[in-house]
Image (cartoon, rainbow, N blue to C red; front, side, top):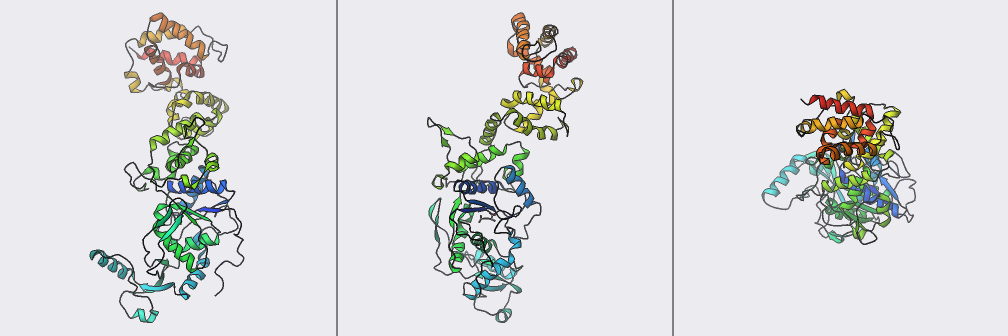
Length: 511
Ligand code: GLU
């Protein structure tokens, strides 16, 4: 037969490594896909190699049409971008396995011709009954090889026959079950069963497609989750039978919950990549967090742990022998802390731009905010930057700056928290602020420093009320909340009229 490779295969003999992430489009993208993409990408970038996105859509029963777009969107959002893939093309296109069915066929034929694979006509019912019996008798489960050495006619005479065969690997007793892993060294796995490689619908299974495609696409390092360790001996056998050089393997530890169970989309909302965006995490913080999960933090100048890093920094220092092999615990508290650290590091214009969509989604700002509203947002951004860990927390802090004075609602807990002195405090504040002129900014009277000075003088010094009690009612009047951005700066941004209006409104609502 002719060589199984494509007619004019692009050269894959270059020395630069080629890595890939190969998700299956089965619903919302899993956080594990981003985690794998990060480690693949880090090594590819460091080595000046290529990073490929391949869509493994051979499981037609679990195929989900919207999933592929979500993969592009979420990985793109995280900045884990690929050099080749179904959307951007590349020298080894197509990158979707469902479009590569003709590629796999000659490999299957070669395996059958050389006695390494065989047709199996057993019906699903027969296979199920066989498995149940094995389980009942506590025998190892596996195909009993009824079809081995039989022609279709011979097999058709027997029970449990199906017209459309599958193709199985004929795994010898002495098949190698150990392989070298870049992270783990020598790894052993159980002897494989006679794995199906071509399904009755004509689609290859993952095991055949992954080997053929990794070979055809010149993949040098297969970096994937540890759940694939038990499959690797099958892949090693296929490479050997097909006379192909196997890539290097690196099996990453699985992400785990606090109780050590595997993170699953069914049980954990945070297993879905779209969740992180919804919750107000920054993409930089998410990839940073994913890196830290399986990798020790870098060391700073005085030996301290440096936990905050960019993908570029991560990639520069990356080394396989530092990857943890123990299942990392997915600690959302840590992610939240890291997100806060990233938020505090943003330029104000950037922070404003990042909170804007969340403010719009919460109706704080409209679809198309005017220049004045946007300028105000940048001043507010400075006040809230240290007060939030998630972008979704911005709306509550920012809303008071955009509601009309008469529409400001006073939160229940804030009103309940007002002390007996609140009325007096508000009166004193009004008396102190009314004489100030409305012009804002440095050197003017309606400036945070000047506002603070007159209020302290009137309430803390003048009335002898402690600052916490002195400013609580003012905070509630201005923001409607118990906790708010810094008070004096907020008053400056709101302006004289709104501030006085809000103080009067709360004052008059107190009996
Ligand atoms: N399609 C497999 C998955 O969804 C890819 C595994 C591999 O990288 O070989 O995890």
